Image 1 (cartoon, one colour):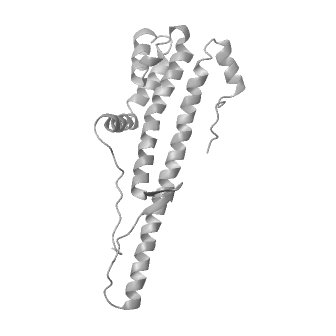
Image 2 (tube, one colour; image 1 turned 180 degrees about the vertical axis):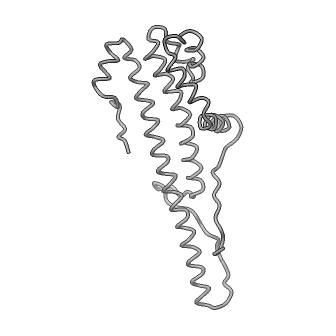
Length: 195
């Protein structure tokens, strides 16, 4: 996993930005890299929480099964499986934590593209850059196509490829749902009692 600090680009590239009079782009590439690091942390948390969730359920079922084998009769399940765990002193459930970290991952993924657009805007357009309050990935792509297509055709093609990918559409749709419509939850499906 990468280190999170605020000097994420090599000194040589930092000097290039400075000499090209687009040093302001440094903050945007650092933000872009930090989004990737945050997504990596979120993904690792989702993976670890999922494994612990499953192991917790397996342990509970094993305990109930062993009790059943010992008694050789029906067992009464007094309490259904409790999936709570301690999260830095706060009791929370695996389901809640998976929901929380999945949303964080998707929001960071969406934000990554906007940070990247900020970097491209400042690094390529310099004094002609759009206002940072107007930048989105699709908005910058439209600006480049409209006013800079002969100079930045290669960048435009790459940005179009990203925008037309199913992953980009999915991330945008999920983020829009989270912001404007309703909460989302990852689906967890497990069998119950040795099926």
